[in-house]
Length: 187
Image (cartoon, rainbow, N blue to C red; front, side, top):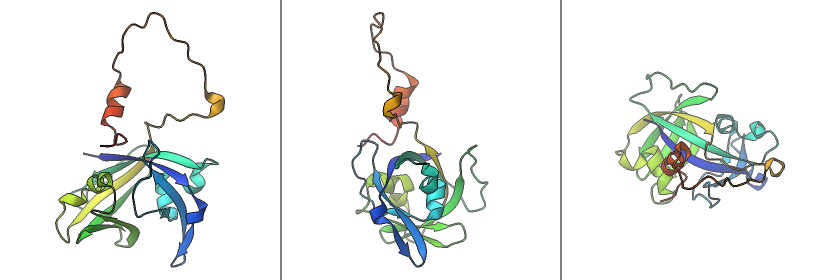
């Protein structure tokens, strides 16, 4: 069963840097309500940008709300998760002490390290880090899709709504259920 984490990635060139000859592009990472997400990560390499649809894929925008879907696996040989029209990549999380480092499929460590007690509990839970044992490895597929909870619109697209006189009561819609269950509603 997939776990979804919704975050806003806002471009911040002041966080751009070069680490071991690898260029990283800086981002402010926010919860959908606009509050800063307390995470150690603030920049992504080209692989992370491509997976999340950032960098050149922003196409002139400076921010993007993303649903990151975590698909836990039994092992590295499980069939790759497929979502038509979206990139899916296989990684593993290796737990040591109170932290978990994400590794590429080939074993190369990424710069993504989550620490229990430092990073937001929602991220720790999303990764399943709190339930892992010492030295455990959790294989997973990661997909990123534009968030269905992203209701922002450009100003030229805003239209004035006219209330209907015959609407007498509130009716729960599937959107209400989706929003109630989405990860953007903070605890």
